[in-house]
Image 1 (cartoon, rainbow, N blue to C red):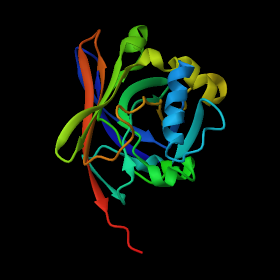
Image 2 (image 1 turned 60 degrees about the vertical axis):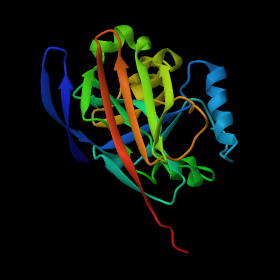
Image 3 (image 1 turned 90 degrees about the vertical axis):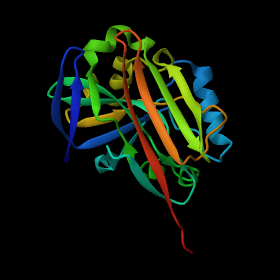
Image 4 (image 1 turned 30 degrees about the vertical axis):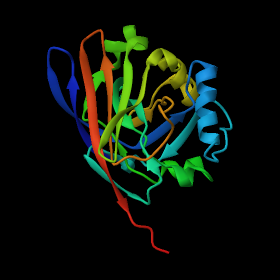
Length: 228
């Protein structure tokens, strides 16, 4: 268990809140549309990554991999980010944030579970109350940008109506249909525009077009040399 301090944005006020995080779950293949979901599966299969045993599927990774830093270090040049909404349980409440499931694609080709443990998972330092956005959840937008060789390009974009509803996603992954306190769950992603590829920098955000606000974060990717 470790602590992360967030700013809770409640529209008319902001409040700092330190949350004790003791588990991280990364939900995969959470698409509501089976055609779009299968497109992402096919995208990964082209890289030699086996299809999931079930959809959705819930991977576990060390909670310590969560970071609010603006730079991460990765071994080799085979990793890339993925924008996702993040749900965090705390004292019976659920907060919504935004993170990047940064993943080593070379490792992912032989074990998705192992790949989830290989890289830090950057997360923005702002959260919203789920109850403030659940009424217009499907209108919210996930978006990411990749900076590759100095050029910043739109990498992913989509609305949450393409993902399984929150209640359904939680019910399928947790006993009793409740997100445990101290659990941070990544909720799935969209196919990359132009295909999955590494970047020198990755910026990601979740936009609420109804309440006119955005949570965003970005980080540099430092590639460590692989010897031997």
